Image 1 (cartoon, helix red, strand yellow):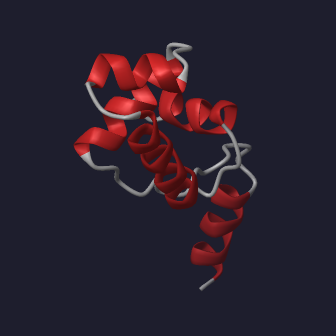
Image 2 (cartoon, helix red, strand yellow):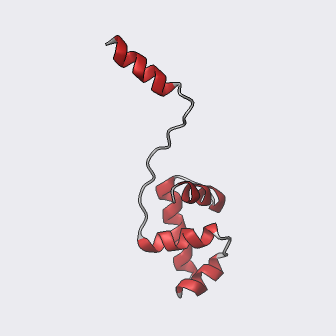
Length: 83
C-alpha cells in the first residue's frame, strides 16, 4: 500500500500537467477549426468550404461547447496542442 501511495504522490507532483482528453470533432468541425487556427475569418472559411457563414458559426459553437472554450484563441490553442 505504501508503494502505491508513493507512486501516486510521484505522479501527482511530477510537475507534468495532465491534459484531459479532448472530445473528438466531426470532419467538418476539424476543417473549420483548422482554418480558424490559420487566422481565417468566418466569411473566408465559408468561402473556402463552400458553405454559408451561418454554417461556419454553428460548427464553431459546437466546437466551443465540446471543448468548453469561449473564443477562437482558446479553441486554436487546444487544436494546436492536440495535432
